[in-house]
Length: 264
Image 1 (cartoon, rainbow, N blue to C red):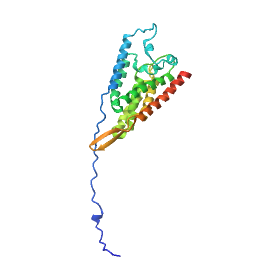
Image 2 (cartoon, one colour):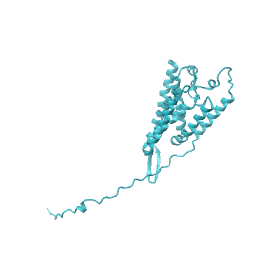
Image 3 (cartoon, rainbow, N blue to C red):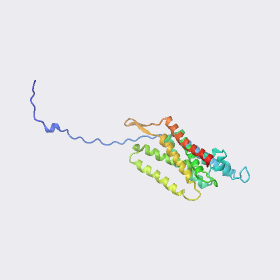
């Protein structure tokens, strides 16, 4: 066996020279950019319907209120088979301040969400949460009044915004907590205001729940791909996820609607 002489250890060689920690590099990612055509279409359609309501203030049926005639959420006609009243109320408004407030909220939340969700997914979100809000209103409200307004769908958009921020919080960094907090604050304040007389709080809660359920399963889940600085965002959700989210929310609230029609 061959032996080699062993030299004393050089302490300077055994300990690597400390290297400065690499600086954290922040990379800006371009968010999806698209003209919010669906938002603007809903805005235009809702305003057009309101103008039509004003022009046709005198109901075609004598003695019948024009909001009732054109599709407000009224329980008795729904139980008689007019199930379209779970959707039509989101296009009807009772006054100018009513439609101005709702359309302003849609203008605030709609364009950003539509860019994130895409046109068709945003349209499904809006219509679905309008439906879920009116279903819960139908279940919880008595038969003596009616409700109208896009606020059921607006609350669905607010809920979708919160879930979207939560599920993609790593991408938004330190801003995520503040942004989610803002959404929660808006929800709490508006639900507190819903305690005032004449406001359908159950419709708003139903819209919130619909937005939460749909977005949890079907909302965009972004993943960063590429090599810096050429990075881009990829949505991990597939069409089956969107279908799943839609079906889960729809089946739950459609079941409630059937229960209310049969046993309410």
